[in-house]
Length: 374
Image (cartoon, rainbow, N blue to C red; front, side, top):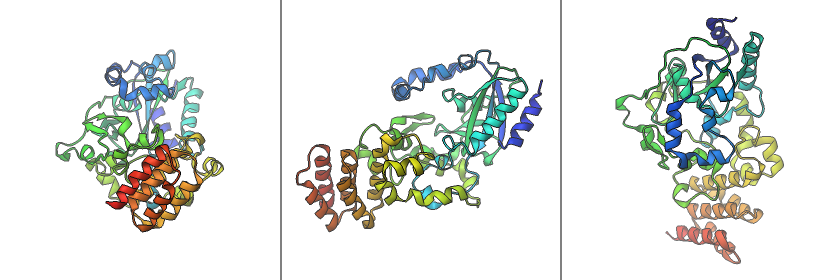
């Protein structure tokens, strides 16, 4: 049977940055956390992901004896500034649909295990960050993210991948702890503009910009629109201000050419006016949490970002969005954005659209006109 050192060597050869081992014991402490935050995470269950069933690895894989945690650095290269300002970094080179990068390496690792008589599962609902800390590859941050112990200059730009296996390896020393320095002054909590972070390791995901950008159930609440700022999909605010990430952010990285080549597809005007064919061909393969049925959410987010830019050059785009869309959430956000930018052209357009408007769209026009007058 293959040895632990051989597995470690193969993981590094395949391209994973770090690897740790832990037992297949249930995550009982995590069960308590979920029980205490049922309302915060009930939306996940409604989406079909049962976090409760992910607590016991033996439910995931009968006969489970160990968990291997692979750590992958997703911020190895720089991303175009035009993308970094609007999208979370972990989504810009996500290959879970295209399967041309990380997915291939996971498949190769599992094939290696299988060829050595080891069965495996890579579950989505197992608490990956908790498993990673239990396997000794990272500690927690106050922003609820995992920070590497040995790679990526001990930053949070890592993805932990838990592989449940039916073979027992000796577990590594756990590092289940909060690793933030005392002097950081809760930088991530203070910087969270929507107050999703209410304290160390306490988050209301329903107020998180990432959640709102791709899972928000309706038009974004008024009090969160300006705080969401310039993000269209995802958010890196708490990571950008974190002193634990400063060493990684201070270095010069080569450009990620794959992302650079597709940056033009994510131009704000193109996103605002895209049809379902464009979305499914250019956007969804890379950022897939919202499918074609959620294209309204993309357009709504783009309209909000245009408004928060305060740039008058977007007024024609926003006027066009009102005219060409029938979804009142898109129309309403475009109206709000016109009011946020303000000026004579925006006010004239809003007064014109006010005639014959109704429902949510009419309410947003009235709010926008008040902004223009302020």
